[in-house]
Image 1 (cartoon, helix red, strand yellow):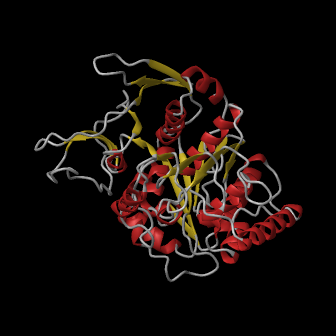
Image 2 (cartoon, helix red, strand yellow):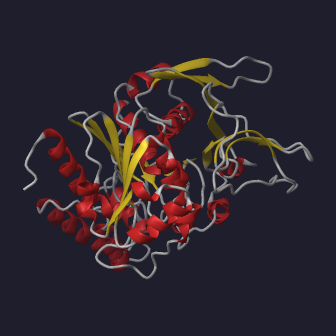
Length: 466
C-alpha cells in the first residue's frame, strides 16, 4: 500500500528526475545516485512512490544478477513493459532508480511490472515498503565474513521479512533456502544427478549437515557441491524438497525438464534450448524457466523465447585469441564459495589451462579489512590439477594468496605473483598449443581484468602491446 504523496515527495521526484536527465545527457549511467539523492531529500521516498501492479524480485547469494537479467530478457521477448535494475545497484537506492522508470513525472504508476534484483541483506529494509508478488531465491550460502559469515544469518533475515502473500520460487537442491518454502505458496526447481556426476563431492565448506526438523545428522542421497543436493533424515523422516521442475537430461544444445504431475499422475516432459557451459549456467536458466512457468507461460513459448539469449554476459566473457580461449569470469572477492564454484566450472573444461587470480579486493593499498582467512575455506586444491600449468596471482595480497595455494597443495613452482594486477599477463607461461586462460576477478578489479585480457589477446594475435 503506497502512502499519500506529500509536497516534499513531489519536489524530490521532480529534482531527482531533472538530475537523472542531466546525468543521461552527460552519458553517466546513474544507476545509484538518483535513488541516493531521493532518499536524502525524502527518507520515505520508496514508501510513497507508486509501485507497479506486479513485482518480481530475485535474490540469493550467487546467480541473482544472471537470473534477473534472463527474466528481463524473457519478459522483453513476451512484449511486456517493465522496470528493471539491469546491471545496476541491487540495494535500496538502485531499486528506487529502477522504479522511477515505472512511474510518471510525478510518481504515479506507469508500468504494470517490475523485475528487481535485490541484495539478500537489503530485503530487511526494502520489504518493509515493497511487497513482491513473486520472490525467486537462487540459493543461500555463506559469503564475505564482513557481511555474511553464515548462510543461516541471511535465511533468518528472509524468513522474517517475506510477506505471506508472496509466492516463492526456490531451489529444491539447496538444503538451506528450500526451507523458506515451508508453509508458504511456492514452486521449486532442481537438477537430478546427471550420468557423469559423482554421488558425492567433497568441499571444504558444508553448512547444512543436520536435519532442519529434529537436528539429527542428515543422510545424503547425493551432494553436488557444498549443501546443494538431496538428503533425508533417518530419524524423523524429513526429506529435501521434491522439485516441481527437475532437469533429468542435458544434451549438447538443450535440456529436458520433468514437471511434477498431480498426485498419482506422471509429470510432463519439456525441452528447452541451452547455450551454457556448466552446472551454474544450467541452474540459472532453470530458475528463469521455473519463474515463467509459475507465471503461467507455456513451455513451448518459453523455449522459443530462450532461443539464443545470452547467459551471464555481465559475469562471464569468452573470447578467442589465436589458439587460446580467454575466460574472464567474475568471482566475488572474500567469497570462498563463489570462487570455488568458478574454479571448478573452469577446471572441468577440457585441455590445459592457466589461471589468473585477481580476487584480492585491496586496490591502491592493502586494506585493513581485507581479511585473508576466507582463502582457507576456498577449494584452491582444484588448482593442483596437472592440467593447470600455471597460476598467476595479482594484487596487494598476492603473497597471502600464494601461501594459501601452497597450503592447498598447489606446487610452488607453478605459482607466480605480482602486486600490480595490470602486469599479471606478463607472468603467463608462453605456450604454442591450444589452452584455456581463465581470469577470475572480483567486482572492483573489473577494469584491471579487461586490461589483462586485452594484453593477452594482443600477444596471442601478434598485436602491439605498446
